[in-house]
Amino acid sequence: MAALRVGGFTRKMGASKTRADAVLDLLRLAADELGRRAPGLIGHTRPKGAAIKRAMTFVHSHSSEPVRMQDVATDAGVSRQHLARIWKKQAGIPLHAYLTMIRIDRAKLLLEPGDRKIIDVAMECGFGSLSQFNRAFLRATGVSPGRWAARRRDRRLED
Image (cartoon, rainbow, N blue to C red):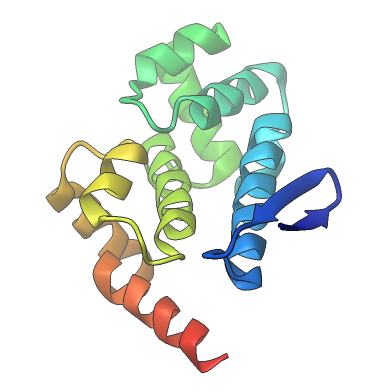
């Protein structure tokens, strides 16, 4: 059995795994690990200040769960209003929009191989319903999750 090794990550390739599938698995593992090790760096902004750093860490580590602004604020040690104000100033977008971006980015990784049901991806990424996921994905990418996955699959077949 062959193994693909990149940095500290290794992925075994069985008979059913292609090299491309193994590479995609490794990329997913690396992205997840980076998100855990440096939550403020994998997002769309670099946090400044202890409260924002704690808030970003909380948001990234709980993004697959229901996240309330009050829970983030409590974890960061500030009031909900103060967190909303400093978050918007630092990130440029409201916390709920940032959380949606994180979830959509993760959904793209999970949809990439094309072997997952969209509803399963939606639930794993923290969306409350399939329709909520479809709307958010369409708004963020301009295409539905199914269409996005199909395009990725078609591109892989062309390569």
